[in-house]
Amino acid sequence: MNTATRLRAALADRLAEDGTPMEPEWGSAVRAVPRELFTGSYFRPVAGSAPTSYRPVREGEPGWLEGVYSDETLITQLDGRIRADDVSEEAVHGSPSSSSTLPSLVLRMWHRLGAEPGHRVLEIGTGTGYSTALGAHRLGDGSLTSIEYDPVVGAAAAAALKAANFAPRLVIGDGLRGDPDGGRYDRLIATCSVRYIPLPWLHQVEPGGRILVTLSGWGYANALALLDVTGPGEATGRFLPGCTSFMIARPHDRPPRPTLALLPGEERPSRIDPAKLDDWTGGWIAQLAAPSAERLGAGAEQILWDVSTGSQARTARDHDGGWTVVQHGPVRLWDRVEQAVHRWQAAGEPRQEEFGITVSPTGQQVWLRTEDGPGWDLPI
Ligand SMILES: C[S@@+](CC[C@H](N)C(=O)[O-])C[C@H]1O[C@@H](n2cnc3c(N)ncnc32)[C@H](O)[C@@H]1O
Image (cartoon, rainbow, N blue to C red; front, side):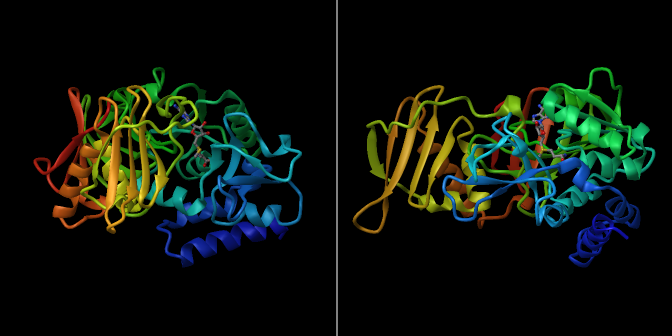
């Protein structure tokens, strides 16, 4: 048994021991798919760096193969263009734009999707092609189509899939537009996140079919949703437990912004502890309440910035142990966040699995506990 085969088997055993939900057929897929063909060289975040910098781990260097078979996300592209093999420096800065998702999450997602042989499945975000290969091993090449936005990433995935003897249908394009030539699907799985559910998906998936996607936004908060398609253009779903995050779909990404300049505005005491936004669900609530704002800062010093209107909110600690907020511009971002956080606190600060989502041709709402509970419109 060569080293890669041994490491692959050890990864499958470890995932099973750690409780990753995995039918035996998915375990066989992990034992069969050579992840190293898909990742090639990759980046590792440098511990303690701020802003995060990334060290290239080149194919063949000591520790490279062990890293490939760790249960970790391996970043394979920064800023939509930089690959680890392109970097001559010790470490570089950048924003991750493609990766191979950690295997336990890939398996958990395939499990939650309930994809079985016979289903037609559409994957959005081929990335390295590793999750596509696992899916093709379990479901068969003919059942799976995968769409990748970035042509360079898509070409590398196509080569890796071919080298590993898989042949699912691959498309280069914007997966948010669905697969116009693909007909109807039973399942759709997205490994990039979205600000709202793209309408083409709701016509592409058969009524009775499922969509699994992470809802994210400009505030960097994420929650994984599983939706049942109930009719053309209609779906309803719940958010799943756990802290799942994915890079945002490129067309849903934040608008470019200039260097931050803090602007003067109206100052008043804050009615909530700004650090609530650092909580996984608290930050998500803030993002639902102010979806046009990017969130910067942390702890007592939060900054919300809506570049399209120039609106800003920034908080700070005051001398009495409380907090102040300064708001600038036409959108009172902090007023919205405070109101939403109060509603969440009044409900006992539930985690995201107590939230649901309803999608119809006229709008998309996230709600707490029941459809007529507190709700927020998504920015479609
Ligand atoms: C986290 S990676 C995918 C991981 C991949 N499934 C794997 O296991 O290797 C996310 C990918 O989504 C792609 N992406 C972003 N926006 C997209 C879009 N609108 N349509 C299709 N792919 C998109 C990115 O280019 C990136 O390669």
